[in-house]
Length: 67
Image (cartoon, rainbow, N blue to C red):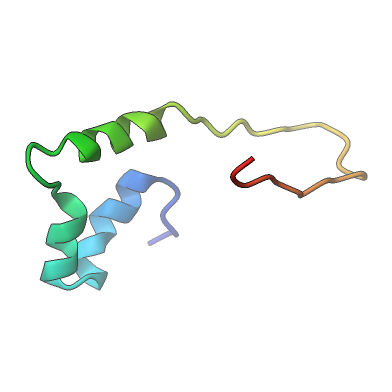
């Protein structure tokens, strides 16, 4: 199998690598699972945009975290 490339593919492989306790913790949420739903909605906002046929001779791999 190829390496997973998205969250759904990683989730489908999780039972093979996680203990049942860790898997239950990951796949469920407390109370009415509001935070779990909010997190899934938040991740859907972000898309990766491939940059093809652009000059990559001058690359900048820097990033800002927390401002």
